[in-house]
Image (cartoon, rainbow, N blue to C red):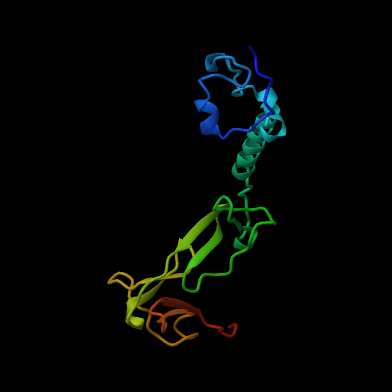
Length: 180
């Protein structure tokens, strides 16, 4: 004696696997199609093979797009930062970064290609702990014997200097010097 078919019921994935090891139409799990247990019965709640291929194509296109960032440049102004790929490129739509003062990211042009400089905050207790590194672009660093804190008068002896701010982080100062 057969029972009348019950109305369709959606199962959670764990429940579906526990239903006597069979698919929705009574076929053994080993005979299920590649898409899973009777992908035809699932309707719009389950994406078919075409949707999966579309997602794969979109992911591949996105990966290619991030790899295909143009990096050619003529000056620092031609380089911008792409936060999605965490890389610098020559595309005019990318974010232009201001010069570094205490920490951050700067994209610069190096030998005709955009490059990335990531500057971390430099802790300090006084001005004597801070110094200026000029390469690859000016940024604050911890003072060492080889690179001491700069001494002199602004605009006469130096155009860049560092100070230890109240936040105990070295800060780079660009002095507005008159043109000579």
